[in-house]
Image 1 (spheres, rainbow, N blue to C red):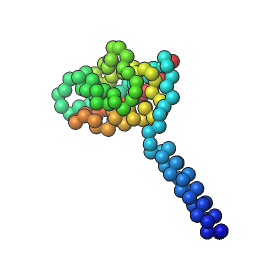
Image 2: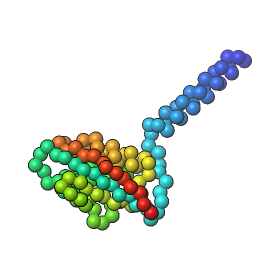
Image 3: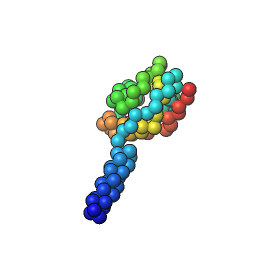
Length: 123
């Protein structure tokens, strides 16, 4: 009887631990708020003489599959020499923000270094 109780407690602890690890490592769905938007501002540097607007478009093309939101017109907007803005609808939830930031900043394109400066949600 004692052995069965110990085994049950260990099984419960293992199940809770697996669930906690899953919450920290797996992608979870975000709540979708219709009519909301997110503004993503990022910059990029390149070691080659590349057209930065074309490079920003290519970076978005490579990363757009990480989120379920769509780009609103006018698309990838150049703010200055190396800074760009994209407006997405609906807004990005926590998990989508993490995936998109990771894609943009993780050397997705050869010889391009990009940084997300901010992601702002609005309704």
